[in-house]
Image (cartoon, rainbow, N blue to C red; front, side, top):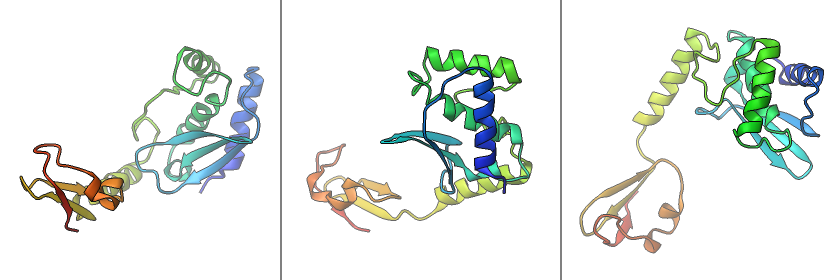
Length: 175
C-alpha cells in the first residue's frame, strides 16, 4: 500500500513549482468504502479533507492515476475552484501541460491505470451489490408497487409520511 501522505506532499511540491496557491491545512485520508468515486475534497472548518479511494493506493496500479486524483482534488482547494468551472479547468490545463498529466473531471478504472485484477475486483464488488437482496421493502397497499431500498432512508424510517407516487396509495413497510 502506497503512502498517501508521501504522494500528497509530492503533489503539493508540483503545484508550488507552478506558483499555484492551494488551500491551507489539507488533510489526506484514505476512503476504503468508496466504490463510485476516486476522490473527494471536503471544505472543513479549519481547512480541507481530501479523501482518496484506497484502490488507487494499491501498488499494482498506476502511480500516475493516484497523483492525478490527488492533484484533481487539491485544485478544488484553490480559491474559486470548488466546482469544475472555468478557473478549475484553466489550472488543470496548466498542470497537465507542465507535467504531462491527463487530469479530467471523470475517469474510468482504465483511465486511472488500475491493473486487470483490480478492475475485475471492482466489477465483482459492484455486481455483488446489485445482486444482493434488498435490505428494505415498502409496498403500496392500493396498487401493490414495491419500493426497494438497500440503505436506510426517510422512506424506511417514516413510511407513514409518504404516499405511492403512482396511485397516491398508503404505503406499508414489509421488510
